[in-house]
Structures are given as C-alpha cells and as structure tokens.
Length: 213
Image (cartoon, rainbow, N blue to C red):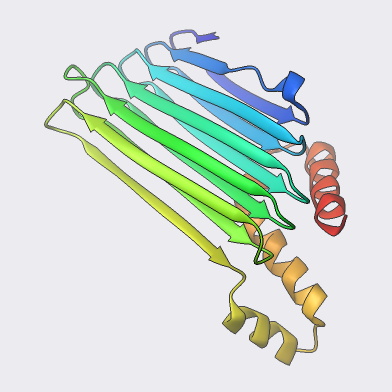
C-alpha cells in the first residue's frame, strides 16, 4: 500500500488465523504519516511480515503490534523498517503476552540506506510470560549505511514482576486479580492507539477471554 505525499493513514489489522496473515507492505511518500496497529489474536501457527519503506522526506511511521499466545500457539513475526531518504522517523513497538506453552519468535530489522541521513528510528519488543512453559525469542538488528542518524533498539522478556504482585496483593487483591491488572496495564500501550472505544473494548474483552481459556 502506498501512502501518498502528505497523507495521514491509520490502519488497524487483526489476524486470527493463517489465512489472515498475508504480508503487509507500506511505502510512504513525502510528508506521509502511517499509524499501523497489528493484533495477533489466534492461530495454531502464524507467520506474519510487516515492511515499511520510508521513501519520502519527512515521512513518519508508528508501528504497534500486540500478540496474545495461549495453549500451544506459535507466532513468527518479521518486521523491516527501511529509511531511503533524509529526515524520516519511525517507531516500532511489538509486545506479547504468552500463556500455556505458546511461543513467540520476532525478527525486527531497521535498515538505513546511505541516502537516509538524519533518520530517527527506534525498535522495541517487550514480552510478558505468564507461565514457565512459554517461550519468546526476539532478535533486533540494525543495518546502517548513513553516518548522521539516531537509531536504537530495546528488548525485554520477563515474567510478571513478583514485587508488583506482592504490592497489589498487599492491597487486598487475590493473585489472579493482581495478575489480570498487570496484564491489562501491559496491553494498554497498544490499545491506547485505538480511538474507537467499541473496537477497543471488544479487543480487550477477547484478549482477556483468551488468556483465561
């Protein structure tokens, strides 16, 4: 999909099965702005690719992904953010909540061509583990040919914080209630990008139902 010069686009995609998991490719023209929100809500084994090419000066992309894994589900996600010209900006954040024996594999690449000077690009992946049997592998990569850029990445994979659980339980919450509250807070980073309250509430309810299944 091409985002035309000066155009602003919000795209929300939900993937529930392998037939929904076609690659998502975007090309941004001069001054174009893309906000892309991806929800991966089901499927025994899903492979998804997201590519964003910032091909026009002044273009900006904000990419948010949220994966909810339960039982023995597997997700393989690949993202590429490519900066072809000067003065472009991108933010990629991919979060996952894993339960049961689910697994999440993420490969994220930021590529800045020699012509992409004064680029600002950031990639982050955060995974919350709700069981000892789930697994997450996140591999960020940078390929930078330009010499005047700001580019970084961050990855965390961790169980629910014992300190936060203790604090909430000391305030009278049961263990299950405390964990639910922490998971909701973790997910809100992505959900806040949805302005349609009806859609937001529907996705939130579906996520909570899935994590309890």
